[in-house]
Structure formats: C-alpha cells, structure tokens
Image 1 (tube, one colour):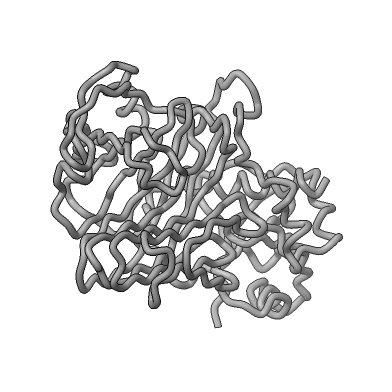
Image 2 (image 1 turned 45 degrees about the vertical axis):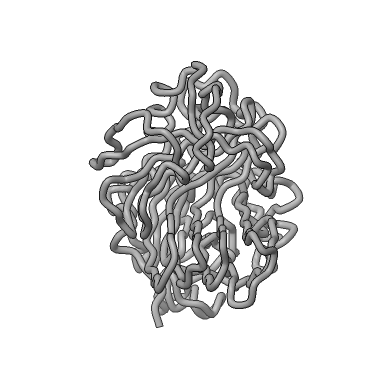
Amino acid sequence: MKNKMIKLGLAFALGLAASVHASDGCSIRDTLLRGEAHLVTGNQTGAISGISMGYQLWLAEGSVPNNSLTYYDNGFFKAEWQNTQDYWARVGLTYEATKGMPHNYKKLSLEYNYTKTVESGSVFIGVNGWTVDPAGEFFIIDDWIAQIDEAYVGRKFGEYEVDGSKYAVYALMTDEGESWRGYTHRVRFTSVRETPRECGYMDITAHFDKFDELFTGQTDTIPNARGVRKNSVLKFGNLTDLMATVEVFDNGKGSIDYAYMRFGDLYVEGSSSSVAPGSSASVPESSSVAASSSSATPESSSVADTVIPMAMPQMARVSPSDRNLVVFDMQGRVLGKVNVPAGTSADDAIFAKFGRPGVYMVQVGGVVKTLSVTR
C-alpha cells in the first residue's frame, strides 16, 4: 500500500515537469525545498534515499582536496572542483543496470536552472548517461567553456534542431578502458548546443529520436581520442542511467549550483506493457520513502487509494477553505497529513509541522496543488 502511494506521488512529481515546462525552469531558484545536504568526496557512486535517483563523483586521480559533490534530499546538487585532470559529477535517474531500459519507452525531459563560476579549465555541462546492448555512452551538452575538438567529441555526423536551438552531433570511439564502467570498447555520442545556456527545458526524448535517425546500426569509421580511426557499429542502446552532469578537464577550478532540477520520466502511451523491460524507474523497495524517510508517518499511507493525477494543466493554489491536506515534497515524497485550524493559513500550518520554508505539493481531496511557504 505504501509503495503504491510512493510510486503515484513520484509519478506525479516527475510528470509535473513535462506538463508545465513552459516555465522552462529559468524563473525558479533557491526557494524550493532541498532537504538535507550530503557531502561526497573521492570516487563514489550511490542512491539518494527515498527517490529513484542516484549520484556519482569520479576523479581521474581518485581523490583530490577541494573536489566534492553535494547532493540534497530532493535530487538537486552542487559541485566544486580544483586542480584535477578529469572530474565528473552526476545526479539523476537510474534504471536496471544489466538490461537497461529502451530509450524510447518513456517521454524523458529535464528542466534545470543553475549558476556556475569557472576560473580555469575546460567545462562541459548537460545530460549524460550509459547504455547497454550495445555498450555505449551519450552526452547532451547545453553549456560549455572549452574548445570543441575531435579528440573530445569525435567525428561530426550532422546537425538537428531541438527546443528551438541547433545541435551538432558527434561519435567517438573510446577503447582504452578509461571509464569507471570498465568497458574497453564503446561508442560515445555527443550532441553540442550551438548557444550555451544555464537554464531551460530539455526534451531528451527528442534528442534520442535524432540519434535513432542518424545511427541505425550501420558500420562506419570513427576516431578515438588519439585520432586513430576504427570501424564501429553505430547504434543507440538501452538506458542504464540519465543524469545531469558536469565534466571538467585541464586542472580546472570552479563550481556549479543547481537551484532547480526536475526530470520528466513518463511512460509513452501505447507501450506494450505497463512496466518497461529492465526498468527500475519506480522507487525500488530498498530505497522506498516508507523505509527511509523519518517524516513519513503511518497515517500518510491512508491516501494510497487516492489516484494522484499524472499531470495538471496548471498549478492551482491552496484556498482558505482547504483544511485537510496531505503534504508532499517536490519529488513526490509523502511528508504527512496537516489539519489547518480555523483562522490559520495553510502555509502557517505546514511550517508549524515541518519547520522549513519551500515549495510543497498538497493534496486536497482528489486535487494536487502547490503552496509556497516563506518565512
């Protein structure tokens, strides 16, 4: 019962981004409820408790002072780097690692908004992930401070337009076993936006559709990082993860802070089954909110039979007449029930119970609304 409720809440939170992406994330900043901060130093991969998201920090040297990743309970993150040859910080969705999830099974998107400070080095920022069948990697780069050269992106295969901007797409053979996944032979597809940006809406599925048009399983010659050209099969595989990513080269120094980051992760209508092959996009048992969140209470499971809508045409506000609320954080995690006494506002009652300002989702009857709690 609890898991049903958790999955419905998460589905709503993830679907919300796709339904209201006209805002594109650019006007939303620090007022959102982040939750507790978790500091990561040194090479580490893990899951974010309570939501179906993971994180990863990887440095070529293993561990370097002043290099870190800080992720929050709701999946937002910030990263800092200094004097490292190769730095990766990633936070996002994770899927089944062996078989993966077909990349066209869901409607995938990202709204984001961050600020960055770069003093030196080459920096690439966007959405990155890994694939299986075949083993591969992709990087959709929306922002960069670097020269885009063949040693990093490989051979250019064309251009396309997504989200109102032109992207150039490349393929590179990586065959030296330098990845943390241990693959010694894989293709990396890289797409680079013509004009860099620090906020916006990214239609990830639209990028994948363009990859499918260009890479149909043909055998072609592409370079590796040393410029040696080899024949490779070019095909985009099944997803094992999908993460907002920062990569830094050349002893760079800087930082990035995501004030807003919301993935859309919706099943495509007409799919052959209700669960994607190999997909673990629903909250896994081992990281369920009921097991891991101290703010979830037994009474909150009583809303499990209420179907939370997958999307809303617009976000309504809580009215003074709304007295019995079920409160969620912005990733769909149930925080608990709140009864609003007569003469008390909903935001005062929520702040009194949870003690934190931010943007909450609240369920009133069969409707989900948003409420900004400020102090």
